[in-house]
Amino acid sequence: MSEDDVATFGFVCVQNAGRSQMSVAFAERERRERDLGDRVEVVTGGTHPADEVHPEVVAAMAEVDIDLSDRVPREVSTAELDTCDVVATMGCSTLTLPDGVEGRDWALDDPHGQDIDRVRDIRDEVEGRVRDLFDEFFGEE
Image 1 (cartoon, rainbow, N blue to C red):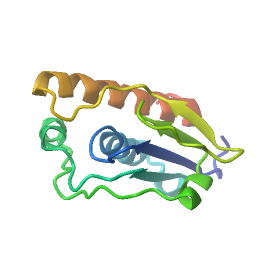
Image 2 (image 1 turned 120 degrees about the vertical axis):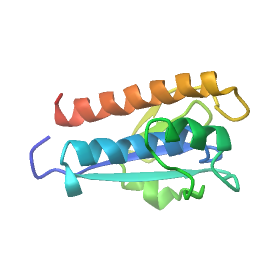
Image 3 (image 1 turned 135 degrees about the vertical axis):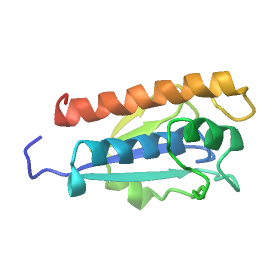
């Protein structure tokens, strides 16, 4: 990407209460740590949002100094997805994406109701995939 290009990444799952919330939080951190400022836009949501971010996800993310306790799952709109360069679904979505939007199914296990060790494994996998996405678009640090 040229230095003036903006990338828009979407992170979507059914409830927007676990995997996609972890993904967007790691994307926000990558954007900040790589000093990408307004070069990266992040979209997140679910097709059937839950009432809250799963408590086990909040706990696992707190262990890596990311606070998700104030995040609220939300519905994602087709218009939002239209603006994305890449939309990563979490192995739980049958979204039909518009032409020109690249879809990637990350096929991640649902952390909801899992024990904390399994949630940590999912969190670490999400972190790696988000880092790889940033490396692909912006080069390795």
